[in-house]
Length: 171
Image (cartoon, rainbow, N blue to C red; front, side):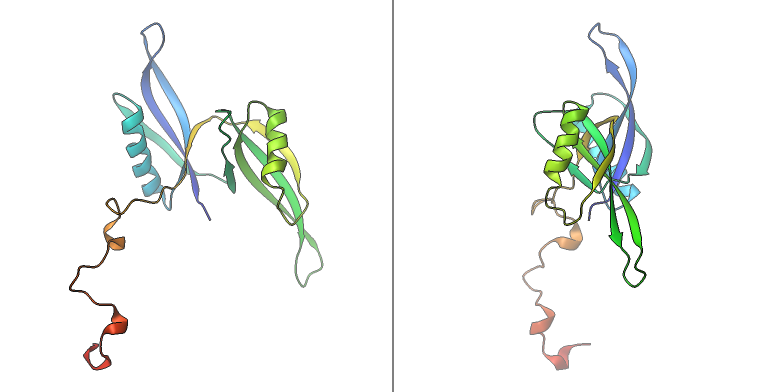
């Protein structure tokens, strides 16, 4: 399950007339902690923004799924509601989830919401769709073999798996 964080970035952008303008933009990043979210934002922004920038805010986002369609850059936050029966109580419980997806307009976002979640086992209702201030989404990308963190690197040749070590040699 993904943990999404919204990150607010402030920097100076040069407009079409050549003037410097202060800009604040919101990004969504998949990370395991606030610290990793900040680190990943600095890594991503260094390649995208020339000059100085600051991460001015990070917050956990209540997003359960993200669907990116290539034909649009406009993000919409969709609220969906469904009910499930609580075991042993016989009562129904209302569950609310938020989904982020790209669409050119609200109508297409509504249609795409149902297309994206057509395999759900419960009936749901889309109760709200709003245009999101999020500029871009950065999902988790598995590092390649060379960029792996130290704890996931391959063991040196002189190391053997514990299963191969004789029982009397184990400490």
